Image (cartoon, rainbow, N blue to C red; front, side, top):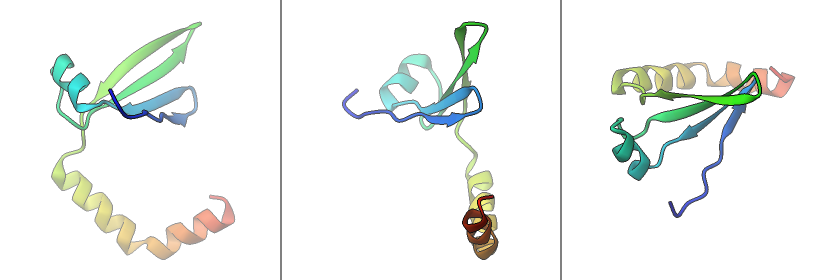
Amino acid sequence: MSELLTPRKTELSWAVELPPEMAEVLGVPEGSLIVLHAKDGSVETEILPPPSPEFAERVQYILEKNKETFEELKRLGD
């Protein structure tokens, strides 16, 4: 693994995109995420598959359609 993986933090979880080599070893699709959950003094993991092309396309459409709204929400602090 030559690149640094930067987790995205949520409440008590961190999401990291699996590198292609690790996805292959685990037998999961490339682009999958591994989610690390802090629970009872330990860390649990969950692997999420990548979104389908249709889902990704729909999300992109919604982002573009509502770009001004999302920019305003960000400006206001969500």
